Length: 195
Ligand SMILES: C[S@@+](CC[C@H](N)C(=O)[O-])C[C@H]1O[C@@H](n2cnc3c(N)ncnc32)[C@H](O)[C@@H]1O
Image 1: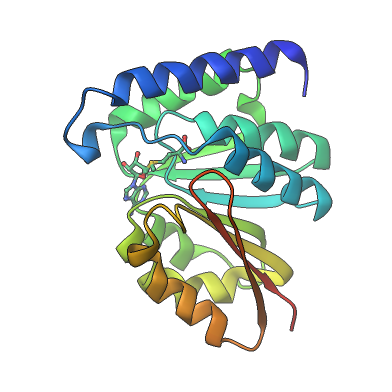
Image 2: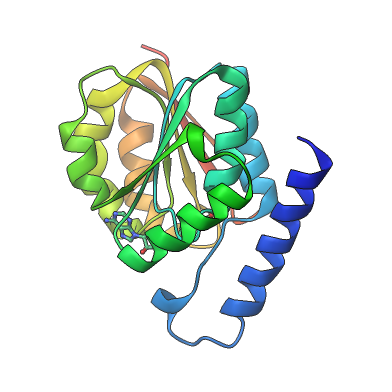
């Protein structure tokens, strides 16, 4: 990653933390994933040479910038879905500031609806970073859209273990998936579709 983009991401992350600090209402916080979590997922995008990446939960576009930088290298495209219209506007501005906007499609909507409309076996990597209790309801469609050797990556698998456990159980019980928990940042759960 070039130094200018790295500096922009550092600044955005610090601004996000300063914004979130005094806010008691979780839903008003930007809740950016940690740089370590974003870096791991960007690495997976590059190693997988993922060209079709879907993120559910854009917020202000912090993690989307990491993933867009990775799909710029793979020649792919990131679709990131955000339910809050104001946040879509902020994310678009931040992605433009980062110079990665042409590698990202920011969709204003519900992640569940976007998943349901995607063709089968069309996505290399899905990032879940929205309302954690909903992930279980995503599973049938998510499983359908993942390509062979596709990856699902879930943030907050350690910090909010209790809210992710039901989804983790679904993945673990599915013989088609190899599941790992990465104890960095707030914890990143990955499932790779190996069969
Ligand atoms: C944890 S924040 C995402 C942080 C972002 N991935 C980052 O690291 O910069 C969660 C976001 O998901 C959005 N969200 C919640 N439910 C959603 C849904 N069903 N579909 C799309 N976005 C949703 C929220 O509005 C919020 O902005």
